[in-house]
Amino acid sequence: MFSFENLKVYRDSLQFAKDVYRLTKKFPKDEIFGLTSQLRRAASSVVLNIAEGSGLTKSEFKNFLRRARGSVYECIPILEIALDTKYISEEVYRRLYDRCNALARSISALISKIK
Image 1 (cartoon, rainbow, N blue to C red):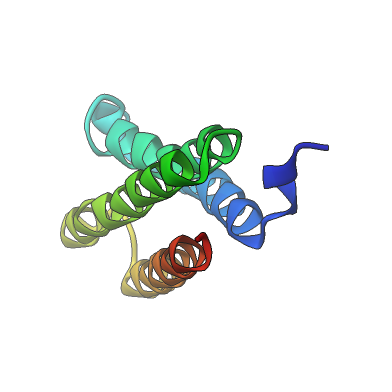
Image 2: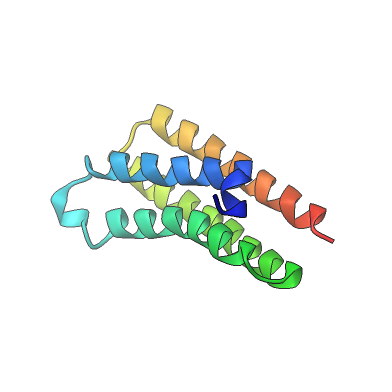
């Protein structure tokens, strides 16, 4: 088992990415290179940066965590567009928004914890 697999923020971000992939399967096919692709890349970037950075120095890991947090932030306007275009409901938007908020807080806490 790799050390990053023990991190709750890793497991939460992995589940978030999986849920985004399932959700975007329902997006219109003409969005495959638009919102679908962008949301999938942003969501997967969160977990990928956590995993990749974990094997580096503490300073480098913090930088990768900042990138992961930035990818969480990137999901918000994409979700807003998906809501405005009626690709997702208000309920789904709120649920994913809250998960993004929780992920961003968890990543920030981990950044602060690393000395």
